[in-house]
Image (cartoon, rainbow over all chains, first blue to last red; front, side, top):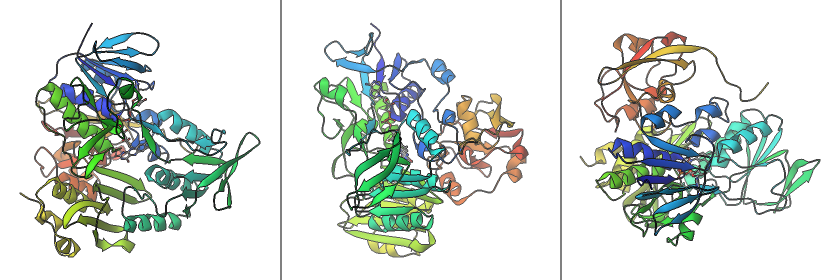
Length: 407
Length: 117
Ligand SMILES: Cc1cc2nc3c(=O)[nH]c(=O)nc-3n(C[C@H](O)[C@H](O)[C@H](O)COP(=O)(O)OP(=O)(O)OC[C@H]3O[C@@H](n4cnc5c(N)ncnc54)[C@H](O)[C@@H]3O)c2cc1C
Ligand code: FES
């Protein structure tokens, strides 16, 4: 029974584990098992370049097939791991077969939260997480005229921005009182509300879908809990994700809003790690256990685990960062702003180039930047440690953020 | 007629020279970045962790001097990330995800650094 490293899930995190294990000099067998039929690919372009017609769905792959051959990474695409046998250190594959491991890395990602409303499965209701879902959505958009986006988070808003560029009618329905509420502060939410409105997208805040209305084999509208009915021939839902923790749970591993891992991203079983969207860990940036969904989180965690397996174990301590592109606004976030008591704006919000710095008890928590990449990069370094930046300094436009970065 | 059809068929030649001097010339579609051309063709010296979002600087290249004046100028976000490259920034440093291949760039030559992170 061959050992080595088995990676469950061939998304951004699974790919990076394999990539970094080789980069770190790991010489044993590596097997990357992925349920989707495609070579590992990136999801961010699905709601950006691909929907804008700038990038082909065939071009989102992380590396071509030859890369895996050259680096002796065995691919098992279109295969699902059905269960883990911890006692024997092996995984069983759906449809038969098993793989032994010295180390197992769970990189199973997350799946879309589904609309709880009646008729949500009607043709004409789309989600966007996988290449296949992107392809169906793009097919549907070819003939759509009125689009309702449910969820004013990153994915919903990126979809709205892209779709509106084709001149379709777009309404975004968001039950919360402001956009991207979980991730950014109110100043940024308000800026993006204005941005979308200026591009002709209507944002319905504080409204939730009550029913998807069907007719003639498709969707004809969305009835809201406010009583209003929005006409729609296509509905896209981006209402969050659920971490895929079932494998871990069935194997008796602890799940706490994600597969619970320690500072080395290990589960309670020393031979099993978890990384990326499916994992929860205690972060000094989050004031507790967090589960993050970002390319940064997937890549940096994978790199940490690869280092641990290849020899040089170091605790995971990377600064979280994220980005979203909507129209010409590049919004970049560093740190986690939840729980701030003071916010400071640098630059003019109206100019579309500004940053918001968030503090709690005088300590910098996070920085959101719109078209101010210099602030974002300075923010990442300030958050990495040892920053003495005060809210007063941040508020002083003539004070350069980077001068507060410890040498 | 499709909303999403892109497919410009034309390709240009781009040469990537590794730190150790190995040279590979590949065809890159017009409209694609020099980073995408490298990744699709399995060229090792370019990592591209952020997939072209101009947020990681792991696609750093040194552009052959004779080509510098032909390239589009460095935008603000590229300038910021060029301040964060792993290998030393030189006057001919660029981020390959920000160099979009066009007719004018046929036979472009770039060198990759020893390491990207
Ligand atoms: C449309 C979209 C846009 C995004 N934009 C951004 C952005 O701009 N910036 C950013 O930082 N992040 C963005 N993200 C988030 C980012 O893509 C994710 O955080 C990242 O993909 C997480 O990587 P992962 O490997 O943990 O999970 P995934 O990429 O979800 O990969 C997990 C894989 O594991 C497979 N799998 C699950 N269970 C099993 C099993 N039992 N056996 C075999 N395979 C299994 C799944 O099929 C899946 O392919 C975006 C996401 C989406 C969907
Ligand atoms: S690919 Fe990340 S900056 Fe170019």
